[in-house]
Amino acid sequence: MSDNTKHSAKMRSFWLRLPTMYGHDWIEMGEVSYGKFYSYGGLTMLRNFLVIVEKDSKLLKKVEIKDDDNILYNPEEFLDFLTNLEVVDNG
Image (cartoon, rainbow, N blue to C red):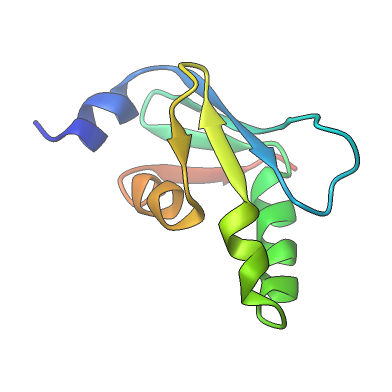
């Protein structure tokens, strides 16, 4: 079983912080439960931000995503993680 598979089986939440956000607050992106990722609008926010990144790629390095265990993911790692899950957009 790969590390990503082990992580996907665990129920947990994911949090997002974008460099354009004021303050240092994290927003909940969604949660993993029973092999599904339930998005609370965080994926839409990330997708909208990636449109901005197309014009200024330096911003991509400043995107922060973490889970409840404070494991950090870059956007590519997070999207790779989602490939093993059904995504349900609740946002």
